[in-house]
Length: 250
Image (cartoon, rainbow, N blue to C red; front, side, top):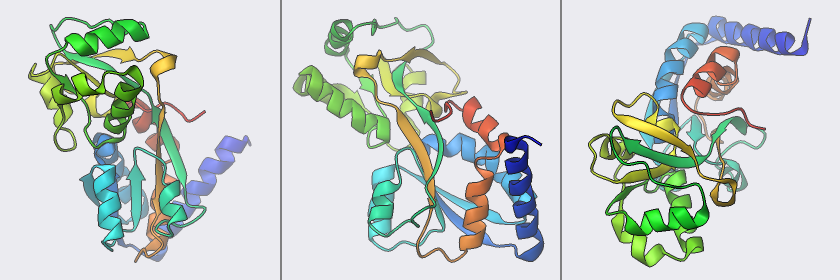
């Protein structure tokens, strides 16, 4: 039997044991960029284990503040690395689970002019010429865009043009044609009507964002949280992550 088959079988047995021994409700903090993927995976997990996952969606910085304030959760899924939370004693050491990665790219509303982002100079001109640009705001890609503008030396000119909003708002800004284009990760845009993904930024401007999950050090239901993390890397879940814009972690 191949190693991958053995691993999948082991996870399956573990999940079935969890189902038969104890069913629990867990609170899961989920980054807004993973909303669609998690909503598709959630019923599969619940059917396989008997556990119930109660998801709360927000931007990573808001979760950091909520966790610091002592808000309880059992598991967390972020569009960034949970290692800082492990270092702070908020997430269990050894529970870090990579789910996939996405780069930062460009998207437009259907029918909008396609900006040229083939080179650094071309992209700099597009950013300066644009009237309005969408980003994920305090989302992981949005925070990266701010550092990129600093590197390009055009932060002062471009930052006032940025529109974002709450988690998921950027996709609607694009679809309604309220911005010239968006500089953002792919997952929040998958399946949104009227949004056209043009591709990733060139390597010299790129930052790959790894989505990771972890278990709270004060989880009320650590076994159920552990079952969720195990399920998130099973073949059915991996297929969902991929369909929603995440590439396998290299």
